Length: 419
Image (cartoon, rainbow, N blue to C red):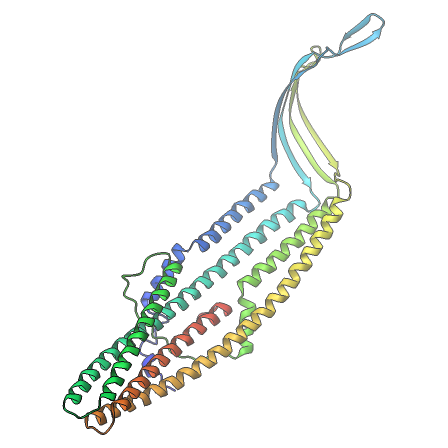
């Protein structure tokens, strides 16, 4: 194994080429979805701070100007009455109200905000990890396309040289016209493959630009040299996936929010106790003094509409059950995804080993046939077939290697652990 992958171990101390790391940083800075999640986290922070104010007194003040259509009067006897209050008067109130006991409403409201903030942070982390994985895979697709362009470009140079050589042999009567036509056909095929490879490169580049958020047409992309490693068994990967899944963690905190919401609805049936302290002024009655007074009161009460809180409790219980099912479904899906990625990684690793071996054979075969052709032992058809076999082997090796890295990126995202 070490001999086969020796070319991949040159930069074993680096996880990714510097260019890829730079692109990941650009994507993190420019990605609008990630920015949106970051703003959601900030919004949840502010909401939490707002909910914490429930432990502080609330301030109130109001002023009213009252206008009666008639002056209120109290009749003591026929034709005998006195003014009970002014026809027009002013009232003014200012003070503080503090909730002494809220039956758990206050603490549950704050807990809901805390859990929302934690859930949003996990969703941000999941988006961040997903973005990194997508940039890596897009970069690997670009490397595949770039490698194929280079391979076909090199083959086109070889085919051109072979075509000129064949034309010279034909003039000398050493080969037939059939071999010349075969060389021209092969050149046309390589030119077609090169055009397709360049098209794939443009598409891969556009996808990477979309993720990074800026133009990359003038970038000089560095190849990656990541060693092929053995990873944990599937059961260990499943365990890591369930433990580290940010989506799953976010959903569990959503569940805790709903449990707190149920407590809030239950508190509607319980009495609340609060106290008020303030100053009240009115000039409603001229003969009453003083016009203004400081007031301190302690009150208790219950208020709800019909049996609305009862149905709200049932709704919260139903929503809680729904999230529990979603958690169960997500856990099953995560296990399935990691199993799929694990099998694809094993397949990609085996394919890469075979591709490395085939490439070694194809290179040896091509050099041998090329030498035989020059010595008039092998035909032009043999040489064209050898060139084609070498091109397929080179392509297969590049595709297999980067396919392995793409699958590895999926596993890293699912398990939340870079390897």
